[in-house]
Structures are given as C-alpha cells and as structure tokens.
Amino acid sequence: MEVTGSAARVRDACDAARSGGATVGFVPTMGALHAGHRALLDRARSECGFVAMSIFVNPLQFGEARDLAAYPRTFEADHGVAERAGCDLLFAPDGADMFPNGRPEVTVDPGPIGGRLEGASRPDHFRGVLSVVAQLFHLVGPCRAYFGEKDAQQLALIRRMVHDLDVPAEAIGCPTVRDPDGLAVSSRNVRLSNPERAAALSLSRALAAAANAVGQGERSADVLRAEMARRIGAEPLARLDYVAVVDERTWEEVTEIGGPARALVAARVGDVRLIDNVALVWDGDQAAR
Ligand code: PAF
Image 1 (tube, protein in one colour):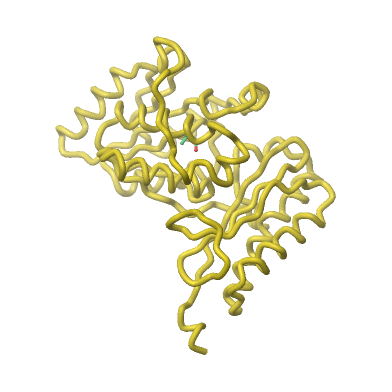
Image 2 (cartoon, helix red, strand yellow):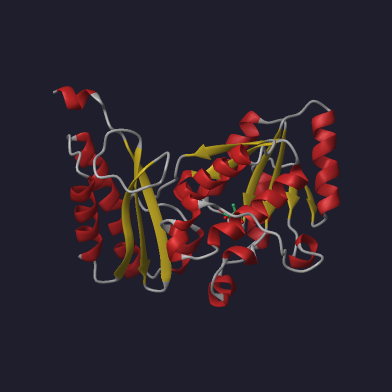
C-alpha cells in the first residue's frame, strides 16, 4: 500500500489505475477507523481493481473548535486497517496539502436538504462535507465511492451533488454496521463511558421500535416520532436533539408512511453527539388489508 499526502500523486495513481483498465474504488474517511469503515473497504475491494482511501479530519465540517480538537486521531492503527483490507493507496493529507492557499472561499451549497435535521443542528456542516468531498472526487477522478448509511443525510446530499453537478462518481451506500446489542458503530463511541454507552442504546432501540411498529401496520409518523422521543427522553443520560420521520426523496417530514421513508434520531449522551437512522419499510399491501 502506498501512503501519500500529495494531491498530485493521488491524481497520477488513480489515472494510471484507470489506464490499466481498473475501476477505482474510493473510501473517504476522517480516520479513527472502525468496523463500519472496514465494511466499506471490503466492499470496495470486492468490486474494484484499485482501492484508494483518504484520511482527512476535515476542519470545514466542524462548527466548534473543541469538536474538531476532540475528534480521535489514530493514524498508526488506521494504517494497519487499510493495509490489511488490501487498500492500494492511502491519501493522508494535512491541512496544507489539502488547502495550500488557505481555507477555500468557494464552497458547495448543500441546498434545501442540507438545511434540515443535521443541517439545522450544525449550520455549515454539510457545506463543509460537500466541499471537501467534491475536492476529493476531483483528485481521485471517476470512481465508485463508498459511504455508510449511518450518515444517511450525508449520503443523500452527496448523491444529490453527484447528480446535480454531473460529478463522474457513483456514490454507493453501505448498510450501517452495529454492535451485537444494536449500537451503531461510530468513531465517537470510544468517548462514551460504560453508563453512557448503555444510555446510547436508547437511540437504536427507539429506531427499532419505530421500524417494528411500521412492520405491524402503524402509518402515523406522529405516533412514531412521539414513541421514539418518549424512549430516548426516558433515558436520563441522553439529551434529545431531534427525532424525525422523513420522505427518503425530499427529506421533508411526513405525516403518514406511504412510501420510502426513514426515521432518524440525534441526541447528546454525556458530551458525545450521536446520530442513527433506519429505513422504514412500508409494505403497500398493508393498506389493502
Ligand atoms: O463521513 C465522513 O467521515 C466525512 O464526513 C467525509 C465523507 C469523509 C468527509 O469529510
């Protein structure tokens, strides 16, 4: 595995791989790699002749300096994960490699979906994500890029950017990886104490209850939202930020489940902000029963 901080080298290596007939698979990350990232790398490795991964803790997507400072940095361990997964190229730039002329003045506007949910709670977060992902896509060139469904709104916005700006990349969503008790794996989980980790389970359990209720025929999004809020609210160590039930296409809140929908939750547990979501599978036949 080649490791580089050079943008020019990434461009050359990916161009050379494509010239040799390989499909380039790309896994953009901020490091602190966990089982979710390993699943993305494995999928890329199984589908592509050449696999590139980036590790860059993107300052543009953090609102508060303390969140950026607190983000775990585990490069030695990450290097081992990438190598064992058969990654061909690890791009690990520092701030000067990515932004040699300082922070970018021209950025990507995430549009209306980017103002909802995570975008409402974290102003400019998605502008920062899309700007850096666009820059990485320009370096890597045509590729299949792999993202976790745990960050469902991020994935939807990247797909929208790829579509609206004709980016020569395919954004592929991979299922959320969960610990055996249901907690969605996240780089932030290492900052949870044992009691906080137990409290964090209220998020995945609230979502599972919502998905289960839909499976039993519940169609009212208000009922689902209220039940999720009740479950997370009952956990003293969790401070709820939002619960939502949205249309997968528009990301607007729905009143009734009648098509592809997603339930999402965000909460602070101790000092750690956690998000999770689940697809609500509506079997249209239920309406006829
Ligand atoms: O999901 C992440 O780790 C980041 O938001 C991403 C896509 C690497 C952009 O910095």
